[in-house]
Length: 267
Image (cartoon, rainbow, N blue to C red; front, side):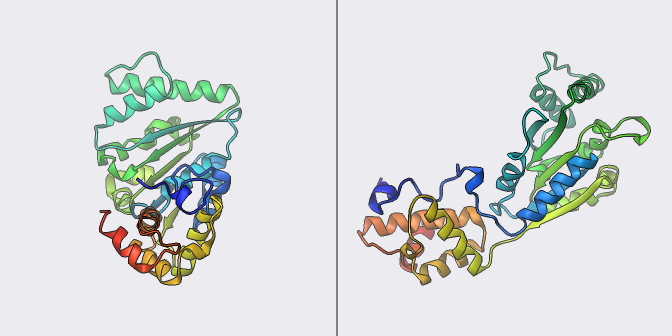
């Protein structure tokens, strides 16, 4: 396999997933999400971020959470699944470092609430982030509010951030999910980039590894935007594949033909 860094004189492999947070591209919607993220933490509420697959949800979560100092915040991150509510509670209990993970829902809830209270007693703010939350069962969404709320709704023990595909909103609007949904104070929808935004995004990623935006010709930019639908993950795959196709042919500039070849290799 050709090393793109060597083929184009770059300092590293372009369009990588592990871009440091301080070098992330500021996609449209990120600033608004960070504001909602901060507000939810401040008042102990919940906020939601949704978008299509590869629109930048997980990256946005990483960007927002990276600003929280570990001496002040304890961030607990779970990846949603279609498992039962009991499975979710057991996963949360393990993430909180509990030495005991019982099989009883009532005992799990007690341990989790005690863990949150212990964190708060240390003058730290717990925060629960659930990625891929659209996979959560309705039975779990109907109970989620009880996990973080003190009796009689007197106080929220822990703010929550849910991230998922657009169907998450439909699931939260289902009547059994309303007790939790009523605690959501804001929602962010990430949409595909426009053609100009995509050009800036690709140029930004090339610049990170010392590349020049002229490496991608204008037609290639258009082809990547059209082929990705403005979605970041697919755009990255197309751009990498197109660079590889150009390197294989020993051609210095990426064209729309290289993007077309890249599109035949990805799903």
